[in-house]
Image (tube, rainbow, N blue to C red; front, side, top):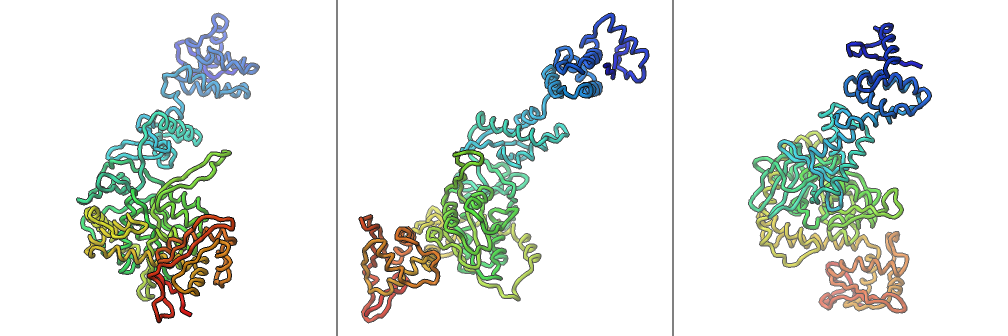
Length: 605
């Protein structure tokens, strides 16, 4: 079988045999009789001769002379190369032109055209990026660009989008998905094994005596806040990275006005300094974060208030999210957002409340790595949190200790505004409010070193900052501490009111004469408390061991009220507990009932 596409003319010019079939056919026959073609003098002749044998021998395409002939044509006459390559596939469909392509690339390694898309992608990225890794050995790409520096995790949509765009600008070609995955794996290996370890930050970072805030804008600008003031910097001295859902903070106005914030939120006047301190604390990743809880009836602008507050800290594609289904959902949200925000919550499981406690002070969530037998996948992070609901959602004592609780009043119907006006007004005022918030942050940082707390609460770092914020706003020293102490005490009351064991214990103590000094086993106390009727027994412990667990949880709250619940160890009969009240809380003479730390106990008989 003869497959003839192109043959050389006597003057060396390759011509189409459809135009010169008779003359050149004779020349080809004569040449074949007198002298065998060689790849260097007659590459087409070598290939045509090989195509005849290819019908019965698929190994012909791997012969040195044939590969050489194809290589010469690809370098000098690409259309002829493509036509003959196609003819080879038609001559024997069992042959592998993929193998031929690889052999041709190996034959001409110096040709840029022969470089694979994978090689080109890797070379392009390594030429334009600095490849590093973070403390968890996740690869990071630092991309110097005119007027800015972008920082992306190698396995992120941001870096993949940049690499596709760079390849398009260089080649005007797209990249197949499999090729992109291979390129990312190669670049990640380079960053992990050859790159330096760097520290990555999201949205906020400690720097010197102040803080840096990533604006997350297209120019990758940041704001540096110090006790001396604040300024916009074009090149951040720390490595900020971003997630796909992050949106830019507003460019702060030249003159700030924090008072405009209250025109767009429904925060009552007595809680405003608490909220301002919470907003500023969201920019301090080196301290624990309190959890902001907004509670109010329908029509109290909970979601609007929460959206406005979030837009000053961490604007996001999805500003408010519905109730998380699992604990893992919470940590996934934290991994992809700086501020974790949930709205319209009707309740949280104990495990979810524990997860928010972990986020506030820093910790992680571990689960089995997919497609492995025993390896763990760990998500570790620390994030500020804001929640809202009609009813109180923070009911566990551990979470309540970390909560800034704000009750939002109901807005009269004639005072409500439509969404369009609300959005337009906030778009207008947001830059001024953000600038005012930065002014307040700088002033508070200047005052902070002078703040000494008289009595530290659980979130002492927030309390110190709040005291500095209050003084910067003109409050007297100690006013914020007193307000925060009242807030903590109110939280303790909420914790006990929502706890079934605390409800039963309150009823039992109310029947006793003060002072009280009870001691016994968890089983004995379980029998004593189990006789009291409760409005909801769904959370009542099922055993004395469950009672002991609940006692450990509520003991700090009762201690703040002057009632000490102490675990004394174990005996043969079970866990030993003691419940005592301080003598100064004894019932005064002539009074039928009194209160211990604000709760009424005791009755003279």
